[in-house]
Image (cartoon, rainbow, N blue to C red; front, side, top):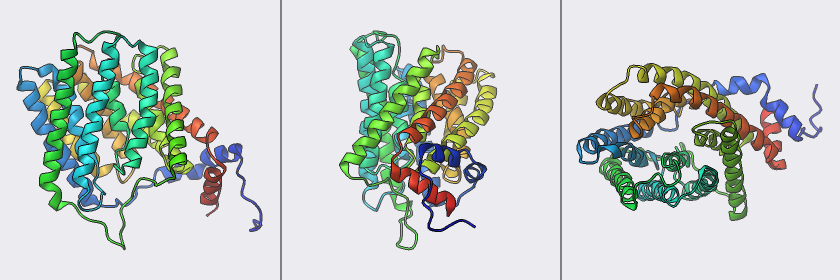
Length: 371
C-alpha cells in the first residue's frame, strides 16, 4: 500500500517515466465530450462558407495564383468560438489582422533577401510571439498554429518575390478573405451558444506576464530547435517540424502535451494516407476547393473530441492548401516529408517540454498520475 505521506516523484526522469507509461497511451485515446458541439459545428460552417466564397472568387479573378493566400485568410473564422457574448467579432478581427501581418512580414523578409537560416530564425521568434498574442488575447482554438502556418507558406528562396507588388497582392488576398471571415462570423453570431455557470467553456490560460513571456520563449526555442534539426537533415519544409513542436509545447500541462504528441503523430499518419490518395489523382482546383469546404466543416466537429481525429483531416487540409499555393510542386512528394517532419517536431517538442518543465509542472503530472 502506498504511503500517503510520501512525496511525489518530481524529477524530470520521473516525469518521462509517467509520460511513457501505458496509462498515458490509454488517456490519449479517450474520446471526450465536446464543450459545445453546437459552437464547434458553427465554427465549421462559418469556415466552410468563407472558403466556399473566397476561393472560387480568387480562382476566377485576374489573380488566380493568390488562391492559397485567400485560403489562409479564411482560417480567421475559426477563432473565438468560446468567447463571451460581444467579444467574438473583436477576436476574429484581431486574428484576421495577425494572419494578414504574418503573410506580409515573412513575404517582406524573403523579398529583402533573408536566407533559409534567417527565415527559420524569424519563424521561431514569430512562433513565440504568435503564441503570446493568441493566448494573451484569449483567441481560443486553434491558437497560434494558424498564424505560424500562414508565415511558413510565405517562405522561399531569398529574393524570390518578383516585386513589392507581389507582396501587396498576397497581403490583400489574405486580408480580403480574412475580412470576409469576420463578416460571415458577425452575420451568424446569433446562433452561437453561450457558456453558463454550470457549463463553462474552456479558455486560454491566464498567467502573470513574466510566466507568459517565459512560456512564449520556450515555444520559440522549441520551434527553432525542431526547424533547424530537420533543416540540417535536408528537409524541404522544416516549418512543418516547427509547427509540430509548437502544437505539443503549447499544452497547459505535461500530460496534455504528451496527449497532443501521440494524437498528432497518429492522426498525421492516417491523414497522410488520405491526402496521398487524393493528390495521386491530380485533382482539379475545383475538386480541391470542394474538398477543403468539406474538410473545414468536419474538422471542427470532431477535433474537440480527440485531437487525433482533427489531425486526420488537418493534414489533408494543410497539404491541399499548399498544393493550391504551389500547384507546380508534385503533391504526393510532400506527403512523406509531412509525416517525417511532424513526427520529428512532436518528439522534439515533447523532449523540450520535459526538459524545460518547472517543478510545479512535474508535481501536477505526478498528482495527475496518482489521482
